[in-house]
Length: 531
Image (tube, rainbow, N blue to C red; front, side):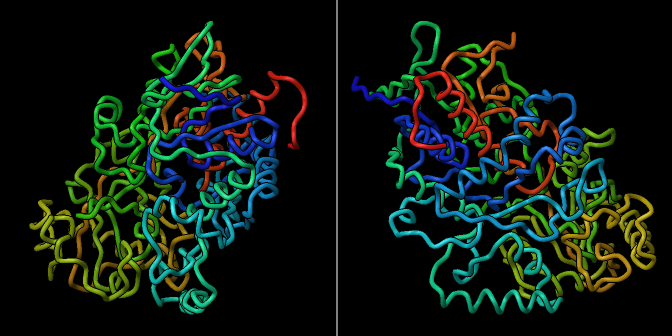
């Protein structure tokens, strides 16, 4: 077996891993990143690229969202160090960040929540070709090479319904003349990779970890096939969750892998490697849930589709059961029966012609025909009456009619008396500002009527290795496993079972990746390049 030696070995090349490696390098340590996939970026490259990294002013809100299940020390570490980590990344990469205007915290009316939000995202980024060649592709590529940001998506979802939408499309079309620029998770991943390249950090692609190496009671490296990578100071596991591990998904979620949009290489290898050394795990029954359309080409994670007027969601009884516009983790908790009712499966999004004539749907423009294969697969249905539509999706026709009639009365008054849809600033963010009196409520009255199947989807799993405020991996008795750290979705989330806002996955990933490198450096001799 061949051997190589570094101060720090990082497993995984998403935001957590690349931030950890960048910090280690600028703290004067030798470091290598290993990535099982043939391209770098992991789920970060597939993401919206938003970052939720506020300061201590968010303490009350984060406690409300995460609850007491997450130790206060971990919550405090995120808030204390997050802003400094963001500044560190800005200084040592080509990345610049900007607030996503008006994107609320996901529970803006909760104690400490903000209707104006706290999420930032990368500015459009132009990077050298060398950092594009091995970049993992996005989850959904923007049309015609347009540099679409998270802030743009809000307006694009409205089709041509709003003047701001028309202006956004025109601006993006004109922006193509400036050459290719990356946005969202693509920009974040490529920007971090550029920082690693400038710092001289090697990233070994197509190099899956096969196990951890220990000596003298501490983790001293990893095995990658016939190669051992020795870590003089520590190993940082940032290899994602177990999104695509059918066995673990069935055991912990009673679901398969068909609804996830996480990176295909997220199969739980790092989590299980830690468990074999006695690491504890938390939140294994959780994920970054969200409703998904089970399309023939893979799941489509729904954001604005649920908030826009002219649609509602029912279960197999043909009754509504939730505020359709609720934060997506909360929505799926209700579908799965974790909020006191349900489960509510099968699940159908019902809409009318006005909805399809006005708004973007799963990447398809207003008035454009949807793919025939969706109908052939039973994902989409269309009918001239609600009664016929009910027969096609197997729900009681009379009940569907009563549900729609009641909902239409709510749309006329602007008040959802059953579930409060449109009352939260979060609901309204993806609503239609031109729809009065409630931007999330519109009647379903114009045939043809449509039904779209929804399943519990996710952006990745949320459970993983138990860690402390220094990102050290812990045993069940609370003692750390010497030399072993974890961040990102390999670790159990600091958000607990909640979701604070857009970027509440990536923000903590960067922060705890950085803190892992700092803690490793604190255990060694003084001296560093900078910090």
